[in-house]
View 1 (cartoon, helix red, strand yellow):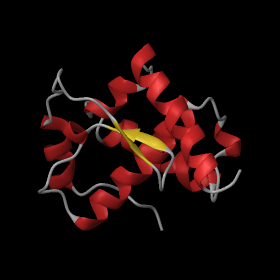
View 2 (cartoon, rainbow, N blue to C red):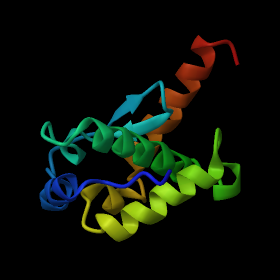
View 3 (spheres, rainbow, N blue to C red):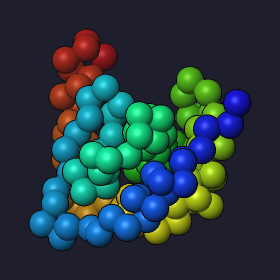
Length: 120
């Protein structure tokens, strides 16, 4: 079954405006950076699940992992990404595919700390 954003969620996500003062936090469960201004409290449960998948995919991109190596189900994640590019092309999260040096340092430091925490 193909997962897509509802029309209402699409409208909400397309209207989000980037907050230039917003800084990312590291999501340890998904090994990715997340900016709080990329989501909205009024998107539906299924839409939020898809948003989480977009953060996961962007995390793969930030770490330089090619699509065929996207863990769990590469085809699913490729489809989610491709559909979102078509459905919500103005989503501000797509404008954060390249990290600043500060954000890159946060990601690398956080990944190392997470790996130490689980004994890798």
